[in-house]
Length: 186
Image 1 (tube, helix red, strand yellow):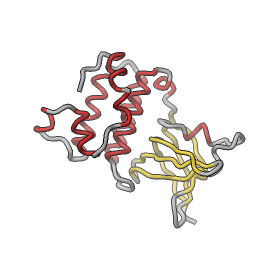
Image 2 (cartoon, rainbow, N blue to C red):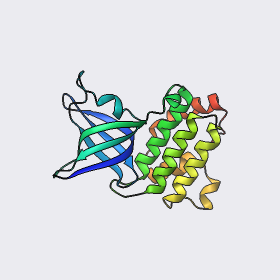
Image 3 (tube, helix red, strand yellow):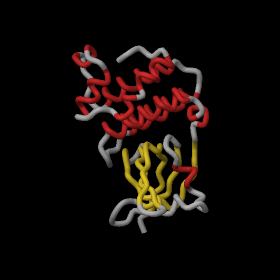
Image 4 (cartoon, helix red, strand yellow):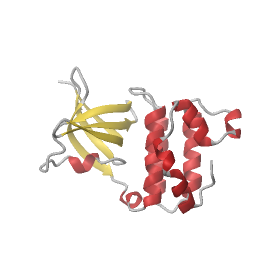
C-alpha cells in the first residue's frame, strides 16, 4: 500500500460524481497535485471542512494507479482572519489562480510553496495588501523564470495573461478590489 502524508494549501476544488470532490493542492514536496476526496460532499463527512479553498492542511493520501485518494485530513491553518475580509479573500483567490495556472503539476517547488504560505499568513495581519500582492506576483514570476527587465515596463496582468495564454478569471473582480484597497493599477 502506497500511503503518503503531505502538507498542502488547497487552491481549488470541483465536484465529481454524487458525493466526491477533486481538489487541487499545492505542496512543498510534490508541487501542484490533483487528488480525489471520496464522499466529502455527504452531510456526515468529517473531512469536508478541512479541504476548503485556502486551507493549509496535512493530508494522508493513498497512491494507487490513478489519482491519489484522500484518506485523512487535518487543518493546520484555516486563515480565518483572511476569509472574513472580502478584499483580502478576493486577492487570495487571485494568488491561487496564479499558482494554479503558472505551476505545472507534479513539479516540486518549495520556494513557491513558501511564497504562497507566507503571503497568506501576511494577509491575515495588518500588512499593506497592495504591496504584498504585487511583491508576490513579481517573486512568483521571477522564481518560475518568467520575469525580466523588459517585463517591468508592462502591466502585470498583461504579462501573466500572455504566459497563461488566456484571460485571468479573477481579472473581472480585480478593479473592484483595487478600488477598495487603493492598490495601484497594474
